[in-house]
Amino acid sequence: KQLLLQNYTQENLIDYLTDEVAPTRHAAAYALGIIGGQEVVTPLVKALKHSDPDMRSNAEQALWTIWFRSGDKVIDEMLQKGAGYIKNEQYAEAIDLLTEVTEIAPKFAEGYNQRAIAYFMLEEWEQSIDDCKKVTDLNPVHFGAFAGMGQCYLRLGNLREALEAFQQALELHPGLYGVAHTVLQIQDALQEQSSQRR
Image (cartoon, rainbow, N blue to C red; front, side, top):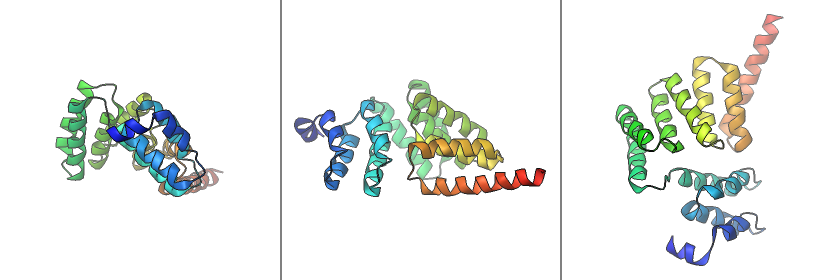
């Protein structure tokens, strides 16, 4: 990190995101994930629409890395521990710890997002949606929260709300192919519903 900061500014790296040479673009996205703050989120979100799939992948990874940083080491460690609980299927423990994170750092979107994932895994769809909405209020470009919200609405059978949430996720990150496939299925289902009403 220190080496990067000595040799590059965030502004340099943002410029390199649009470089004609693919490895330069990829390295810039990776580096921004390491040293970037909230101010580099917009150019990285723009890079999610790049025609180069590796570029999209690097930009996505960089965004997740940035979103996992609160600016407070203790909060970051708690978040990582909460995400670890989710990975180990200890959802109740994750919710308890991530609730603490949201109480200590109420403006830190990723605390709510990780808790939304834990609620989702417990099939607590409404609580998960509530947390996803908090995430998108705090971080309107959080494609993961929109996609998660869509999944919850889908489980509740609210196809129109699911479609809207999924479309917002895709608008930010067109490379979410699973989401794009689900959108087509929902559109077909809605069309079938409307033709049955006629």
